[in-house]
Image 1 (cartoon, one colour):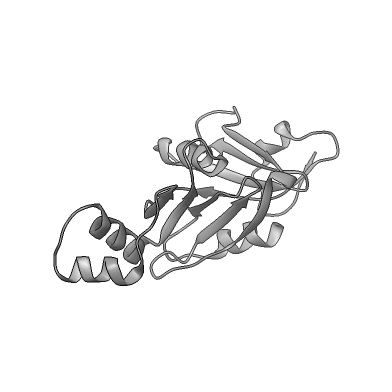
Image 2 (cartoon, helix red, strand yellow):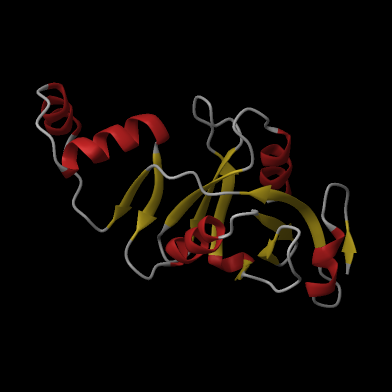
Length: 167
């Protein structure tokens, strides 16, 4: 139950015997386009719809994807949606930790109860996925096939680099 540099020691109490916290950082969900099992339109159809100011859901999805990127891919009830709900619902933020065995989420400066836990085998990837004005963006790929993006900072990359490096 040790922590390495850059990890929040609050996570150590949630570690199993021998488990090490490798890195942790405050994260939040920055909404963008959410693909929850809806068949997406093609770029050409949505671009034409937006350019012609033909409103509706397609134009909204196009704008969300253009500005914020795709922030979630999955279906109702997928693991990515569960993490999104935890990170998005907490006003003060959530601290995400990568250990040598799991990925954990804890409320930032509020309590000690874990909000979300995934074994290493349930997270198939954790990597940086920066966009303009979202330099601290991370992509978590989950074993059920879903994906969620979380943000450690708009311009700062240090925390995102540390979490991705711990993976």
